[in-house]
Length: 337
Image (cartoon, rainbow, N blue to C red; front, side):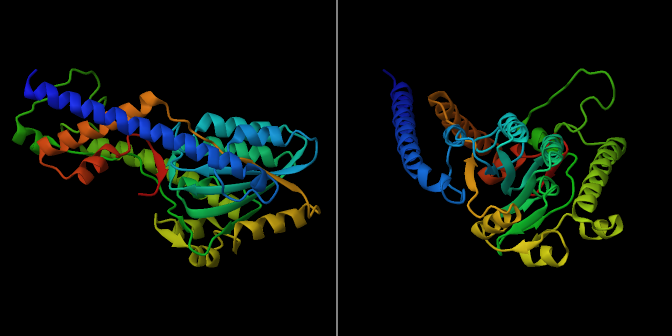
């Protein structure tokens, strides 16, 4: 057996052992979560990582309840902490459940896709039309799309260290890697029809026309965001445009600008919501998306990480730069970076 073959087998065995360790740790963490379930579902629904499936079973007693619904991570179709279909389905079920009388929405997100954020916003609007209460509590970050989906709330609460705002749009990010490709001796040629069909590709410079096209998309999405904030927070559109320059705000700054209603903690918000509902003992049931990573996903993730490191080394780029390049937006997004 050659030296390279032995090295390859060694690396593969190490990867298998790491993956097995990850799976074992995941099982251990899930057991810890289950042990906490009864406490959190009988208290205030405080951030706990409780799975939604168990929480649904816990509410079947036929009594009125508040749903503690968690939105965490980037708002897109699916990732390790967020799932669009799960969230929309859960909101829809709560909308049609006569036992549910309010949602306490916990938001910890830098935002995400314009399309996905607006879907969530519209679903929450439909929920409120059933004469149900919606309170929002902002975690460490509720920025851009995270703020967008908070706007339908009857009241918005934030921790004193919350970062929010970032009212703006990224319509697309353009990378011109032509000089880099020339240096490493790579030439790419694409056959296409329509001069803007490959707009935004990294192997040729963007044209002025393409910049105008993306700017028009950005402006339209921005106008929509401004109108959402103006309506939800009862702030004049002109005032919203002044403060919506894309910057983030501290909780204290957001309170002064009327972007939030109160600085406090989760338990305080739940207490106020219960008083609003005239039911001090109203039960809180947790709905929290839990992504269960498969063995295959663990392996693919590790292999992808290795390949990215190799690609960065070959191009002479720091790994952090490579990660940033891969994270660039290819779609309009309400996203804080």
